[in-house]
Image 1: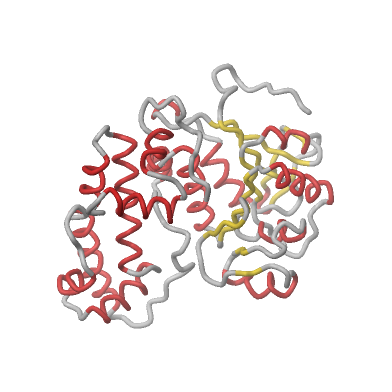
Image 2: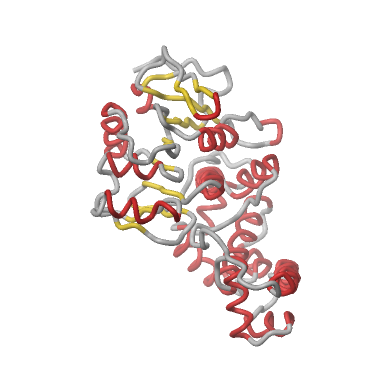
Length: 341
């Protein structure tokens, strides 16, 4: 195993491996590097140790557009990694190097979290890691993934999903969503928000949203303005009881029309969107304040601590108290995620 030469002060950093080989997409490499390879500790972001891992380090890995990636570790470094990331591919049917596939299989057997962006799902499928598991890829590649790997349960419409500690994401921007989600689950919502602000991107899009949103008629722009105003109102009043009927009335629509337009505009239902925002608000309060649990639940709009606890368990696989212990400011265990999925 290669010696760890991380700079002083970063030897306990969260270790991330970017797996590189001929054919990886430059965009996905850039996303991974921007999220985990930029030092933002001066803004209280976590310390990361990103390594570019390849079968051998002597030769740069060429990418499209005249770019190249110089690996700094061989595959023998992977047992050190807390997280392994597989970029998408320019040619999704090109076989990955056998040593890469073997290393990924060993990493999964060790229990290491593995995530693939976009067409990186094809690499994981080649390794057999998606056999009998749910996976997603770019919407334009769904049929190809099904045809070439029928043993994979391909989910047709999501931004990212997880199955047995293996994460896959849809195309392009969904890779950013997955990367920020992985930061959120290992280091908390505030850390993910800090990185998102630096990248000038949305800090919170759930994996269950649709991959793309179609605007079928010109009047949808007018409807979108009304829906944006409703969402802004809801965010300012999360602590109050909010119903789909009430939000629809504010938008000047019937509940059925409102729900249809809301889903078309956002890729998710009004109720799921509200729950996502309340979970995000509760996470922020748990990280930033020492408010008692009933007050956190009230301010986030859950009504009761019991309801908040139930939603944390079903969506985050943890409890509010465990989340606070792991991610609150000054927590000795910050960065040790209690979130199972």
